[in-house]
Amino acid sequence: MVITRVNPMSVAKVAAMLYARMGLLCGVLLSLFAGLLFGTGALIVMPIVYGICGFIGTLIFAALFNVSAGITDGIEIETR
Image (tube, rainbow, N blue to C red; front, side, top):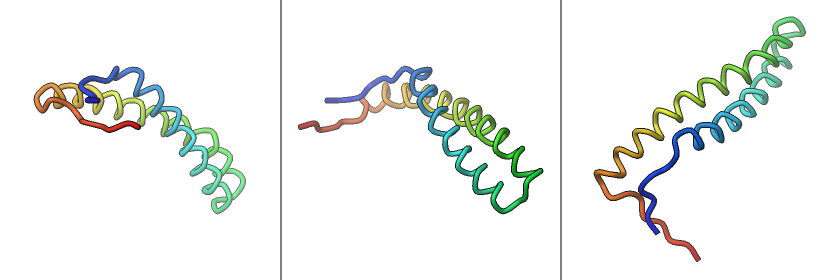
């Protein structure tokens, strides 16, 4: 099986959810160490920022993957 193309929007949506969860975890850790006022803001802001940045970055890299996979004949994977 060879992966030659991915839907950038689909990959970016999944990555945005993963990055938002990672941002929430970082926000929780930051709130534990930074105190109540700054920590509460981190719980709200960090998941949003991480999600947006993860979405944009993954969208760009998925599009670049499609170009690269077209040139190099994709990624070969084995399944059982």
